[in-house]
Amino acid sequence: MLSEPIISFRNVWKKYSRQQVLNNSLREELVSLFTGRKSREDLDEGEFWALQGINFDIKQGECIGLYGPNGSGKSTILKLISNVTYPTRGIIDVRGRVAPLIELGAGMHLDLTGIENIYMNGTILGVSIRELRSKVDEIIDFSGLNDFINVPVKKYSSGMYLRLAFSIAVHSAADIFLFDEVLAVGDEEFKEKCRHKISDIMVSDKIVLIVSHDKEDMQRYCDRILSITHGIMQ
Image (cartoon, rainbow, N blue to C red; front, side, top):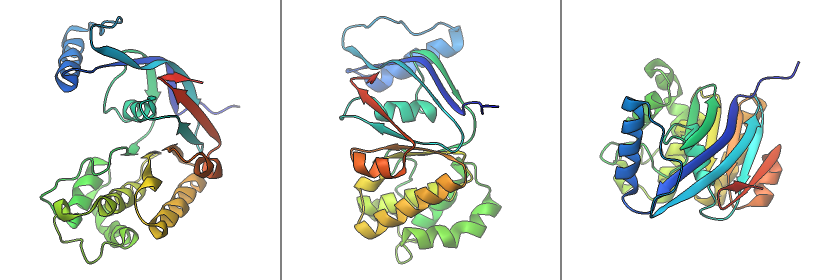
């Protein structure tokens, strides 16, 4: 018997506005939520389709690569899976807990220390305080930030942000892991640690989605690579 897909996209379209993106998006989603009306399916002035008619299924244990030029819609797909945003039309079905690493430092509170952000981000990802306490040393050790873990993250470099965010995400009990250009930041030693950790996640029968411009790196891990250009899946 074939396993049911864990992630399913059916004719998914997503539009954005080049002007007042946040306000328009928030207003439209609130109107849709309280009135039951769908977003307009045509394009107003200044709007564009970020995704057009996307269809795919991902099953348990698969590692999928999303490949394409900047602005092609790869990160939008990850945001839709993690409920950061919602489709203009179409159906998305996601079964399981999601650990998104789709924007560098997203979810970090700049005035909190590294250790405080571990607990805050961990609970956002669905990890209990008890479980975080048992994993905190492992998270810190993986990040390599032992000497900076009590420093406010606003003083971190971009590489340090990534180390901490990646370490928190991969030590969560998520079923689906979303990595957007994770291997583009950080030194080679940490990149190699990331590669090994991604391999460990795959062995544990989780779903992994990787966005990268490095097709050779994706071919090393991915069961399939989905190519996207101008919001259309090739």
